[in-house]
Length: 386
Ligand code: P1T
Image (tube, rainbow, N blue to C red; front, side, top):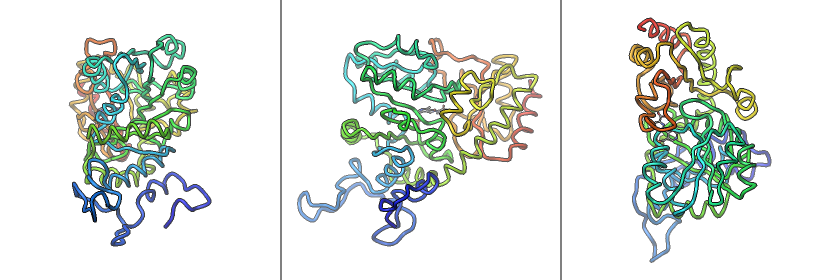
């Protein structure tokens, strides 16, 4: 099967199943083998079949990288050992004195890496509300090299207009990177809006089954790719062949899962909005969401993440999170099973006492693909514990 000679571009669902995953040329295995090897035989010194050492390249990883690139409408994919490893490798692209403008509501670990690790190496960061284009413009300095977007943001689910912020950054020759973990390429493709690179925690929806930690970067920029490919090998934060295989398997059902995650989440968000014990619901597909219009333009559906503020603050939030039976109280997101957490005390502990601090009464749901009525019944009984 030669996917590249087809006159018609294949659709997303088809590419997720086939790109980079042709039957194995040696055995005909329909599923990409797990090439669990660290090294490769050379016929003569320097004469090999394209692979010499698995930190540099591995066929299972190559399959994943090719598929990810295709799904994000990019030319090149790079896989990493975690989402944080992907961001760390990207930051090695910059040098002392470079300035990065960052969305003011990002995953707590991203904030921690920027503020508590890379500032010590001389990188400078400004955090700004990127739903406000003028505030973003004001944050740009002569030494700004990167604008870092997360949309929807974690955990407040703010929607940043990628096309608008990219146009602004490009006026100043600044690179734009988008953490597309929450939306996935099924719901939005930042490279098509002009962004220079897309990053993922493949731990989440791309893997989809809460059984792997991984990360990725996709770009179409030759210069950026060559340098990041060099850094992937030089710094060495690469995923194992088995972990690549797990993510590849997850990708095959990404489209189906994102449809159901989004359908279930919309249903629950509408129900939560009517609930007496809920002060505010944040979900991009609700008309009450402040950037609802941008979300409708930029995304295909609302995704599987909901945040809400419980009436009764911290105590109520923690009681609800401890009382669910189907929603598992745990960090992370994007798996087939539903999860519940309290960001201020869990995923976003590292932003406590910072300007990015989140409301202690905030509850975050990762809505899975279970039956939505079972999920609603579960939340309803958890609210009774308050
Ligand atoms: O956990 P890791 O694969 O290293 O990915 C980090 C990361 C990066 N970007 C976003 C938007 C994320 O949500 C994460 C990880 N987030 C969680 C573990 C969480 O519960 O929010």
